[in-house]
Image 1 (cartoon, one colour):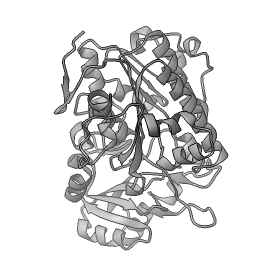
Image 2 (cartoon, rainbow, N blue to C red):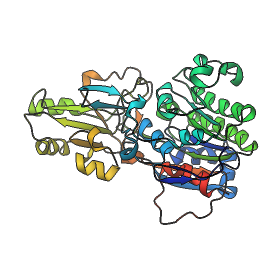
Image 3 (cartoon, rainbow, N blue to C red):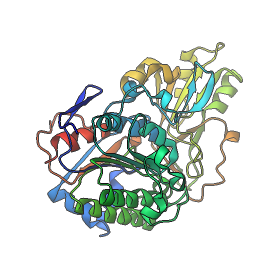
Image 4 (cartoon, rainbow, N blue to C red):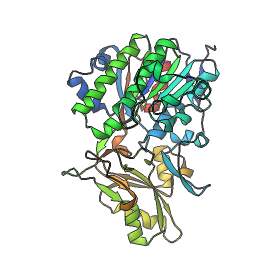
Length: 408
């Protein structure tokens, strides 16, 4: 095993002196943790204010799962790794597709680099959609809670996961899906003891429950207990989030939705523009594929400036950026984001056509993410940091740097 530094995507990372656990809590804005601490159900997280490090930073825009998880494990923005949504329009294939295939990844991950150098790696993600991307070229353990019952030595580096964890296979729409991730992390640290482990949860609870509610506090109490157990094994723990979460409703609890495709079809005719919603994934029950970020491709009949003016006039729209402006401002791959990027206001989401969104699964008022309003996220470590530049703009994808290079 090499003890030298690993360089990935222009950043250098020191070798682990003790196990390092990176935790991405899906949809975790700081207020969830604040409220759980205030309620007295998160004593471990509360203790880190004195003996650890509690910071805040920005995640990448669009504030969705895939771009941010890949930014965290590559230590770089989407302009480097290429993953700019959960879903996108593949211009070369002329198809709207999920962005789960590792063929879309344009950079190496820190995880794969350490594994190639001889480190023992483990990745546990809640949803299976992330597993292929996070585990790309990585030799080690890599499985999802969603399909833990299907894990094999050949495909995932581990078998008999349900027996190891001691939990039944959880529903994809449950708090238990995230709990399985934490429980698996504890058991792996206890048995396999990886040098570097990445745990990524799901935001099902954050979509359903606001900070300080009973459902949210119960989730963070569960998480707090598992983090304390990971700490007890001597691990360096660094926690962040892929995005925050906000209510997207009016005062009566009705979803605030701007249906962009309907608006553009009405103004310019069908086929004048194509609206893509990068939040789209197979798990739409809790958000109806509605988020605060969209991209628009102009057709031949209407100019980009015309489309931009029409969209900017819509109530609830916060930003309308050209391809070049969005790529520069949000560090995005320009060839994968359309002619325009649209960001809605904090309480508003963007849709395509009303008839294409099934909101029947929403049991509670809509909460979602995607825009700049969900960009601020916690960055928390169970160690003090040495050498942190106070002028440096912290990003969630700095977390590996903090844990490996600055934690003491």
